[in-house]
Image 1 (tube, rainbow, N blue to C red):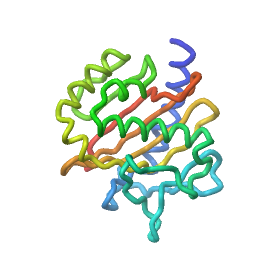
Image 2 (spheres, helix red, strand yellow; image 1 turned 135 degrees about the horizontal axis):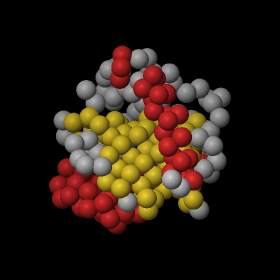
Image 3 (cartoon, helix red, strand yellow; image 1 turned 90 degrees about the vertical axis):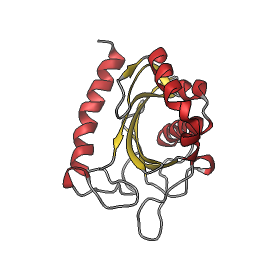
Length: 195
């Protein structure tokens, strides 16, 4: 196993239990995964970024075409968390425009993608094939809305971004693991339908 694969495996081993314990809230309702209470990040968390907030303290839906880091984001555009967030925003923009090359370009060469209801895709060619099929219904993707719920760094070379996307009547929870090897790329991506 390569050093990068080992680092990713250890990072996921640390992240997944935290996500499961904290719970994942879906946009628009208070349903929590595993009936856990989500613990919002505090402004003093090192390397964390808070979602855009409304007066009620909940994440506000963001159309990714006009999204930009806000003053509440710790480590805004210049920080590692802001850079990882920008990669995910670029990925969402590419989905909305139906640009397969740009979608695939957001991923590392050895990335792993696990989309709800699809076979796991590993590597550039498998990811390209997966998204070529997904983007055949590009009109649906163009109408989708995406909200980045949280972006935080995990050291200087890794970051985690969670988001919620709504496509038609379906809502998806998404988890991105990004790694920096010269530039930030998505190394692992997984989504599932919110219940």
